[in-house]
Length: 373
Image (cartoon, rainbow, N blue to C red; front, top):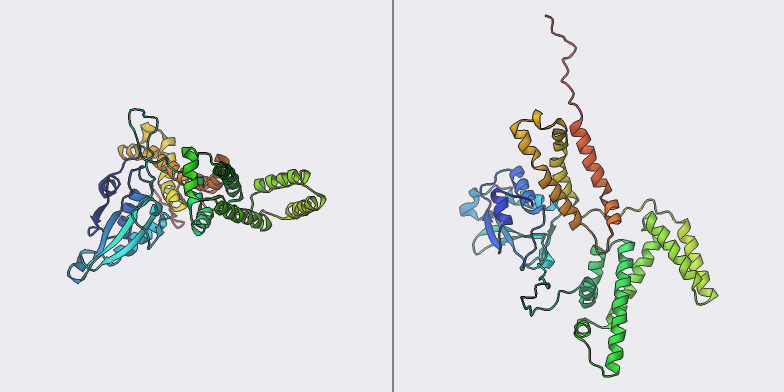
């Protein structure tokens, strides 16, 4: 497990919202190190969201206690690890990974409120000794069924931005739509719904879900038309078009599918770049610390100083933090292979950093003069 010390350790150890005075920070480096150490790795899962409040400035009476650039340093450091400036952020899990600034005129202080990346703890249903009256945690599909249309569109754009992720979501929601059809049939026949059906019935309706499926279908078609596909996705899309053409209900439908297939086969997708890894900045910051350690490991323990051995001991912690951020960057319904493809540039970045660290340092030039003995 990752270990943290100092103020960053105190921040990460909180179990409820807390406030920290940053009057002792006097440089951009110290501010950046605090934010990176405290927030680049997601917090542990918890029952309730927490808010970390930093005091970064004050009114005239105490203004000299804080560096004039402190708020700017903290905000820049948060943005560097991909935290979002969200003026409407609040102490709930929807605001995880965001921050906002505030000037409290009552206390005459300036705050930066940070809502760390973390997830709601899942109740262990396997523990039969405990009885839990809380409702079961909703699946992604059920959350989207319950969402307003604008929220649904924003969520799909952020969590399912690729053609493959949208396609899998479409398949999942079609399964839920079939459940609504079964519920409607039961209600028409005055049959009782079971608990799962009743819970779904209270979340939304088949008609609302039809609108969301229509939006998804339109979005998928636009991605195909605009060439927003990886090479693998294009191949899969062409295969699916072949299958649809074979099962087309009539010649007119078959001809339309074949025309679309021909257009896609001629369309280049080489310029399309999949979405950037969400936590790129934070991962690169950790890779910069990790890369030089490979050269130390190559030299072997017998040739290392005490300080170097201690530094080398940080490698497992850094690797774990990088792995955590990589997994936190996974899109909804994204496969391991798809995530690995998006991570490839970052993996190359680490390899380049290691090669650069291992390269022998150039000796300073003597300007052509040699020492004569």
